Image (tube, rainbow, N blue to C red; front, side, top):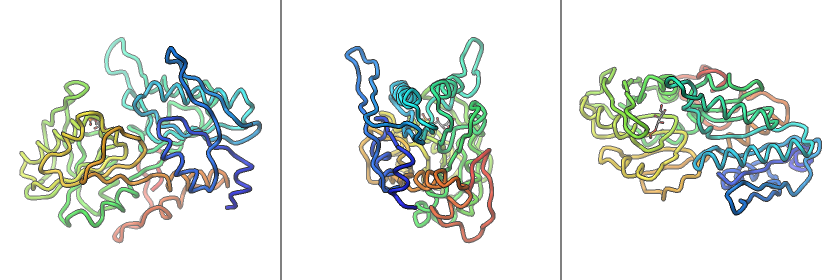
Length: 338
Ligand code: R5P
């Protein structure tokens, strides 16, 4: 695709949540990021101004709603509102990590569904289409009236994982909600799936009550959509070791939020290596066992296909090798092509 003709047709703007990822996506497409000012008023309110015309243009806004979640969400809303009021033809939000995704249902009386609220806000400012990666739960797509493309980092991460994992690895779902994700890893890695029953005590503490499947003497790959405080991984490691697993664990997660204290929890002697992507720009300092794989080629590939009105069907074949033993095309959840 010719970069000059593409650049005529669309603009990409980035919020401040992950400028490095946005820059890499723009580089892959061989375009410049759109010029804009994003600042704060003295009282903390978000100030945004586009510095170039978007009239009748296709606009992509890149902004994971990662910590500081509320600031980054408001920046995205303000950017979209500026585009809408400047007569952009269509606004697509690229939200690699969708904050508030865990608040996808009412967790008790007199509580909100904040994930739905975030979706409503995005649509209210004119965002017509959403692109995201490994949503916490597929039904969040239903919070949006417009099209949602949920990409998956699993093939990308599996490509990295191969060569690091021992042959007798089992893929571990840390809770019932991640079984489909674990099955997807298992498909790419040709490995069996183990499921843990997790009970969340509060925002930072979880407890594994059962290990479903035989892990005796086996090395484990714990997979999750996100690592936030690291509590889920730490508790999974404890339960797996107690169930007789070998002290050789690997961790893979799409979104490495890595909040303060997470690194310490992940550096358990049994945890050999941790694999994440760059959907989130974490403040944590990288450590030797941490592998960060960029998701920019996947997102850029998706954008190229959108701009050509093409299908995403072959996206993963281009971005990751398929496993030797299983070449069947399979869907993981709603709308995730693999
Ligand atoms: C929970 O349902 C999620 O899939 C993750 O397991 C969880 O959010 C990870 O958070 P933390 O690292 O704080 O345990």
